[in-house]
Image 1 (tube, protein in one colour):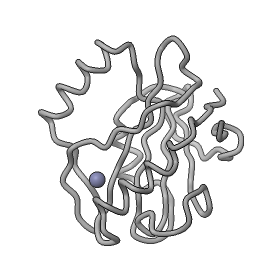
Image 2 (cartoon, rainbow, N blue to C red):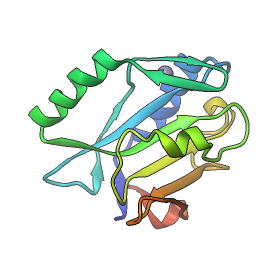
Image 3 (cartoon, rainbow, N blue to C red):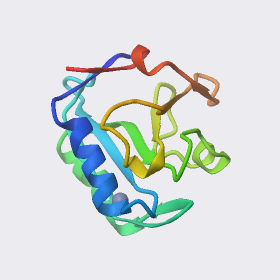
Image 4 (cartoon, rainbow, N blue to C red):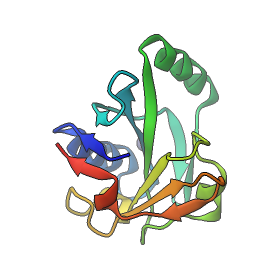
Length: 146
Ligand SMILES: [Zn+2]
């Protein structure tokens, strides 16, 4: 699926990364869209989480409420986006613990704690395949700025 990002989605994402991560900690946001129009990413959510230099852990209670909210608002998570201290890639932990385990789910990694220019420069995108394995995909083949 080719996702179209609403204006502001990328800017909001980098704002969260910089405000929360302060150039010292990893951070994650989730990109959401309605089930009525799944290809149209309209919301950025910054989950409650703990974080350190090399990783982050989502808050279980927050996540429980969030799953309910997604159901109540007919909304789904399409892409998880997180930062790395240096280079963007998918670590074994990233591979093992996506927030959604479903073919087509995307994970975008932003390098340098999101301190660089707002955009996809040096970013890494990977997708869950029908066999459950991750495979890198070209960003331009899945994400387009609306
Ligand atoms: Zn954060």
